[in-house]
Length: 470
Image (cartoon, rainbow, N blue to C red; front, side):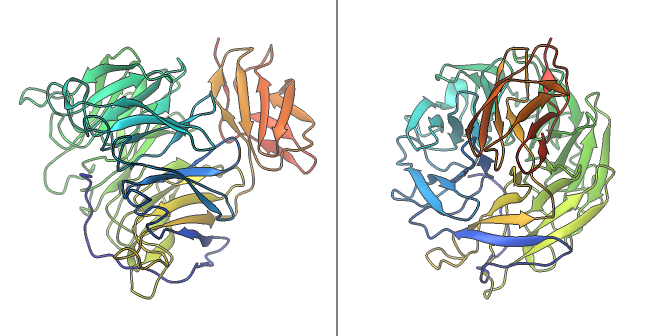
């Protein structure tokens, strides 16, 4: 995998709880190679309440795994990649509206250039597409996003006619179409080498990043229509000590205020990467420049939690040099929430590459690439952890937008016995499927706003507004 990984790493100590106000980190699982190793991707919570993820290596065939883990730490290996069906998955999974999980591998497949796969929540995997270097790109390091048209969209870092990556769409059944080829010639300014997942914004366009290229050479932020018309929104600087940062490996998140937030891997005022916000029109503001003491090498994207703040990780740096978890306000005030340990006596994990996810219990969950209790891997095989920051439970809708009459799944915690579901105040009919899932439809008269579920214990509100499409 062609990602920047620098520095010595070491295993860490026993499942650790750090008391920083109400912030508590718990190691849920330490990989031991037989069940996978080196989880480079973040997690996704499925409608059955479980967390799903992938490992880059390890497992029965050493080519990585797909796993499920409960929020109490019980891990089940669902699939062992064998190279023919993919290898080295470094991207998070996404659950589509049909209930299946979809993902990518950066290697393996028929042409050993990576794959797109689907897997049921119970573990039945099917390879949907095997990439060939030309013409459809290779090495899809990024995960997929399901757009409102029902198709899945993603990027490849390399391949295509110019060997600088592509943007593609693929149907849930596996028909792939390349919608854009990045250019590598000297007169091309659209960027190249995209390692980041796309995000569909409320304007219907898909937004993403490239780590190289653009008019200045430091990478780009772009938007692309589902039909393939690409516009460069911002060009990062590639000179020494560029204040705006460079090489955004991570994708963007559109915040509740409509702006996009993201990170750069390097540069900024201190040369160690940045956190930024950018408007859809291309006005970028650097919110924070890392200086090493608060972390550096930022390859993970941000997640906006229910408190309105953004949470993210740095691969290295911090007080103990093993990377950090940080919180940053929309206006740019950054606080280090947790310092991972990199000393030989530590087993809490180290060097988190991946984006965090907030589960419906309110806690944040993530992975570390190294560390843990196992000695089967040099420097540890990696971990899954949970982090409590004092936030309460909520509900999440799948999808987050739809027309009146559209089917919607509501994901939550302790939903049994729920008595009411409303879309911005408009009551909906619903069925409680399980303690973690409700099915419903967008009711007539509904308008854009929060979804609320009344349970026997409390009223739960959705983490984001559900957008009613005319």
